[in-house]
Structure formats: structure tokens, C-alpha cells
Amino acid sequence: MALSPNFGSIKPSQKQQVLESNFLSFNGGAGAGDSNTFAQQYLPEIYEQEVERYGNRTLSGFLRMVGAEMPMTSDQVIWSEQNRLHVAYNDVANDLTDTLTFTVGGTGDAFVENVISKNQTVVILDPAGAELKALVLSSSQAGAVATIVVAPYTAADTSSLAATGLKIFVYGSEYGKGSSVVNSTGAADANGYKSITPSFTQFSNSPVIIRNKYVVSGSDMAQIGWVEVATEDGSSGYLWYLKAESETRLRFEDYLEMSVVEGEKAAAGSLAAGAGVKGTQGLFAAVKDRGNVNTGFTANTGLAAFDEILKNLDTQGAIEENMLFLNRQTSLDFDDMLAGLSAGANGGTAYGLFENSEEMALNLGFSGFRRGSYDFYKTDWKYLNDASTRGAIQGLTASVEGVLVPAGTSTVYDQVLGTNIRRPFLHVRYRASQADDRRMKTWLTGSAGGAYTSDLDAMEVNFLSERCLCVQGANNFVLFQGV
Image (cartoon, rainbow, N blue to C red; front, top):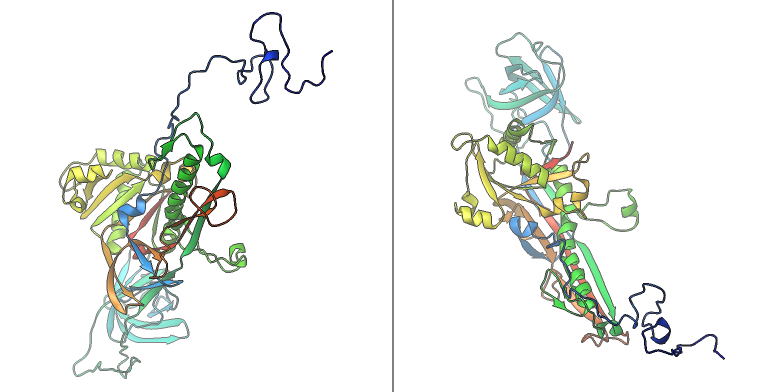
């Protein structure tokens, strides 16, 4: 009489043969075609090594090419950048006779007051390209509205110019004999002279705490697998948790860079601000806020569009050497543009940043060219091509397709040191002191894998960093965006 159910029993057979009824299944699987049982007496051919079908999957490295890392001890880093030297105002209104008005105030490049003086000479430009040169007869300010009365040198009035959207800038002055412009108070004197006190624009950023953790139980640590794992950082073996721990570390190292590239400050009234977080300003946000954005660069627009970028760089810091980090399509567009250039005045090969060594530049993945008075070094940015990051949205409206980063250093005023210092245009500040270095912390907790900190039968691998990005002289950066 057969027992029902048969708890692991083996049914006898009249003949010596392999049957499902007389072999134990190690995974509970049963049925026709089920190969994962002890009835499968032939071991399948196994490739022990995992196929690396995505190659090197790490994304970090961009900041190592263009920046530096420096410690800081505060919750905030503050730096000051110089304003422009010469006096100019935009969005000036014209009464079409002799009076010009404009609004002053604000931050950044906007002056906080009217500093045009009586007897100064100005150039007045309208959007259509017409211009007049004039002598300032009087200059005043009421609240945020500034008013100047001018006497054009070559016309009876200003009616030849547009009524709105004018730009004016000071190019000199003209005084009569025996006049005085001495003034030590800063206010306009009897002759209408205004002393200009230099000002600076202040920027700041705050670090964010980045954390991650990997947990593996003690039992899983002692389990051997059939597949030999190998990861980008060189970890290998038949313990699957080695792969998981290694990939968690690599993913975290990528996050260290991605968080300061993509970071956003929490705006007042946003849900993030309501949740008590402050965020941090990353590279993309800083360039959109304080730099230059080029939209729709393609092979068709090519050289003409690129020359417009050069003209804009002339109005900024005119940094001679720049690096281009591009996605695949934009890189090909640049190649198509450069294909028509010959050496000499139009362009050519240049590797000045790499001691004029082509081999050094190519080893770092850069190719160089020269246009006008500028040298450019172009390379692909894997972060913009990877399908799991920015590469997933290439070609979409406002998608980031590349960034132009000036090479070298900038001079800024350090609020802590109280002196002018030179810093790379792009650099990371991380929290560190003699008591604790939070650049990249890793520690083990639990009771497995060499950790003996608690009664938890597992190993916890903890990762932590606290950092932010300083984008100094953002007016020299260019962000390439999709149409």
C-alpha cells in the first residue's frame, strides 16, 4: 500500500534505470523537461566567467580631468567674483529728444546705481544697429530709475534711435577749462561727478551628504556560486556578494560625481524645501543660471553657429584654452564641422594644454583644434551617452548635449582666508577637519565579514561623503542643449 503523500520517498522500479520517481529534486522542480533535478546526470557546459556585455559601466572621471578637490570645514562655501570694469547699461528708454531713462538695481552684472557722470561721453546703440555719440549734460537717479540728459555730437536730438531697448556705455569725458572733478564723498559734486566704488558679486554653495549601504547576510557570504564574478574595480571570485558589494561601491563613486553635476538648490516654497533639505547647485544648474546656453548646435549650423559662440566668449573672459565634453551626436557634428577646415587661419591641430603633445592628448581621449584665437580640446563624455543616464534622453527638447569648460584657473577672493587666491574654474569642496575626513568614508558594521560591532548576522558596508561643486567664472562656460 502506497503512502500518500510520499514525503521524499523513492519509488522502486523493476529495472535499473533513471526515472523521476527514484531521484530526489534539489529545487523542488518536477515535470517533463525539467533539467534542474538530480535526474539530470550530465553536468551542463558552464561558462564560469560572467560576460561583460556592457564593458566598463562606470561614469566618473569628468571632474578628475577638469577640476580638483579641496577640503572645507563649514556648511557653506562663499566666493566673490569681479564685476565688469567699464560702465554700461541695457534696456534704456529714449524720449526721442534728449532724455534717456533706465532701471538700476539687482545682482550679478547689473549695477546697483547710476554711476554715469555729467560731462562724460557715451555711445548709444539701438537694436537695429544705429548709434549716436553724446555728451552727458546731467545725470540723476530717483529710486531705481536713472535719468540722463544727453547732447548728441552729430544730431539735433535722439529721434534717429529706437524708443526702447537701447544700450549705452561710457567711453570718455569732455570738460571745459578750469573745471574740477575732485570728489572724495562718492556723491555727485557741483560738477555732477560721481566716484565709482568697485563692487563684487558674491556666490555660495552648500555641500550635501551622500550615503549608500550594502547588506549581505552571514549565510550568503559563505555560499559558493558557479559563476566567477569580475567587476570594474578588479574584484573577482565565486562569491556573488563580492560583485554586489563592488558594484555598490562603484555606483556610489559615480554618485559622487553625478550629484555635483546634476545638483539643484531647493527653491523657496518647493516641496524639497518643505521637507527640510537645501540641495546643492550642480554644474548644469550653475551654467544655466550664470553661464551661456547654446541651443540646437548641429552639423548643418556648424561653423556659423560655433563662430557665434566664439563671439560670445570674446565678450566674457576670453579664456584661450577650453575643453569640450560632448555626447556622441554633438561630437560627430563637430567632426563634420572640422572636416571642412584646413590648417592655418581657419583652424588646424593644437595641443597646447598638453605641452603640444598629440600623444598625450589622444591618450586622454582628447582631439584638439584651433579657431580664431581659441584652442579647443574635444572628447566624448560617457555620462551623456550612457543609456541609464543622460544618454536615454538624447535629442529631446532641452536635453544636455555637451558642455564647454575653460581650462586653467581663476582668481577669486576667499572670504575665509581674506586674500585673492587662484582656483580651478571647476572644483569640488568636501568636508574635512583634523577630527573627520568626509571626502569618501567607508566602514563595516554587523558581525560577519570581519565586522564585530553588533549581533546582526550580516555585514553592512556603509559609504558616505559630503561635498559640493564650485563653478567659478560660469560666464566662461557654455552648455549645449537640444532644440
